[in-house]
Image 1 (spheres, rainbow, N blue to C red):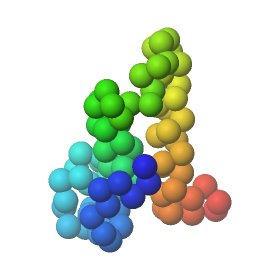
Image 2 (image 1 turned 90 degrees about the vertical axis):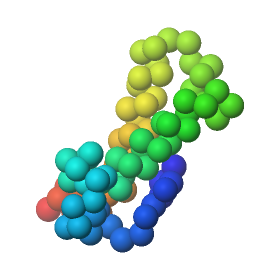
Image 3 (image 1 turned 120 degrees about the vertical axis):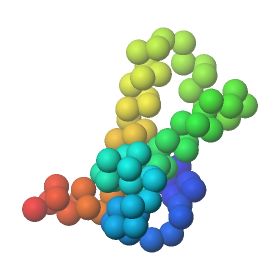
Length: 84
């Protein structure tokens, strides 16, 4: 999922240019949020949804949160902030 639909550059570039993605994601982890969004849009296709076998909505929600956390963890800005 990481880098799915990557436009090149980084989140700061998108924020500086006023890119629509920066607005949609409130200029926070723009590319990471975009990657997660694109992945979950793919999951809406029944042939690509590996979560469809999870019956309980609570379990599906837990998996979605875990995926989002893992994708967002790749954000260099977040990693730098968390280590300072």
